[in-house]
Length: 286
Figure 1: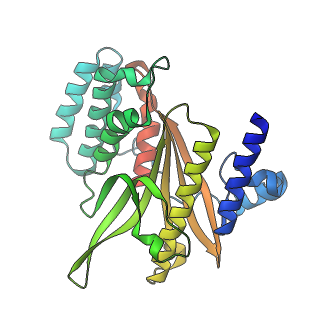
Figure 2: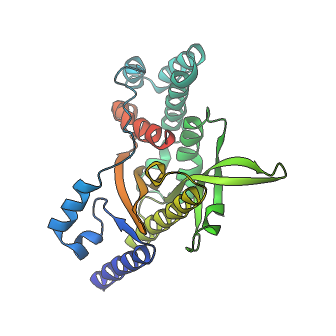
């Protein structure tokens, strides 16, 4: 029965994306079984990840002292991060704020990481990813995060039917100086840590199709297709995968995996939080 269920979700995924002209070249894609490993690997090399990969810790932001303090005492590490945040400026200040938010989560919301408790999708959205994402995007004056199931306005341009997604990054603009319209720039789907294969497959399908709708709007409005690369974030509990979708030929869209991360659960592993911060910065800088 389980094998039949897995097979049916793969078929659903392939048919849904195929109907929208989307080829999934990400890791563990069902399209690999459909195309065969050799062809799939050639396509992956032909269409590699397209977002600019960020490593802000290489020469921009230093968090070594925060990491050292977090291994000893989360409270003092958070106080130090707050001090750095208030004295720094711009982008660097934002990164320290992200660290402060996450140290607060580790200090006061650590039960959310326990596997023996019934932790819901909403728990992670409200207590973990919400504060981190909002802090990451705090300097985006023209883009805001819209939380709660909503359908993007971009679906009106495409023949595809839009889906409700958990979080949308939208740009607010006035049309003819009268009507305020939301322009989609990215999408996020969330699920609980133990989400089923069907839920994970459905969420990725929704994200890719929604991104395709956004691309259709951009091209419709005159943007070069080479510049129409839209990110999306799939979150399952503490894990996140960043994808991108782009138009590579008439009627052919390609989805690729950009990077992935898993949130650390205690101060001893805080150095690995850099992976999450870099992923979110790649998501932010589109």
